[in-house]
Image 1 (spheres, rainbow, N blue to C red):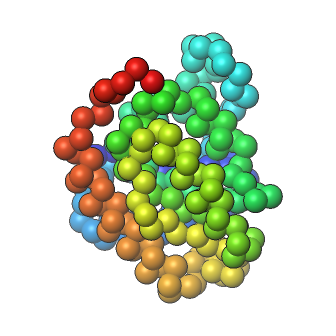
Image 2 (cartoon, rainbow, N blue to C red):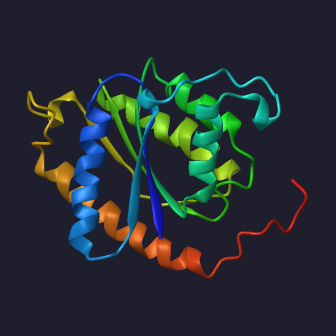
Length: 187
């Protein structure tokens, strides 16, 4: 089971710190996931404009391949100006609608205020629903007060919610194994 950890921003380090915690909790479960980290900051991004995939640069093609080859995802995103980062939306725009079909996805997000958690509900989950991903219901939202100066999560409730998210993700992984990923329609 290949799980792609997506750090969906090109700046900042809190989303990566949350992924570090998720990885630690995944390893504690004893599940033998093959975890691969995709840091958007390591890619040369191009704006998606409808061209065929082979007309984009090597990094964009690699990004798409990693999404397609993964069996599940942990997506970590900051919330900027009440929205997901453009680079994350741009990456989703590169993907074929079947790329994430019936694959489990858990979401972790970080923002500057408590209210920004609604971005997950109103923007990110509908995008993942479009892909027909198996989105776990218990995403985890963090804000600056949950971290110390070294970007270590200091809020025990956040750590407990991350552990629970990992547990539920594991159940979604099991469920996804029995689902045919082939399209039954022509979308």
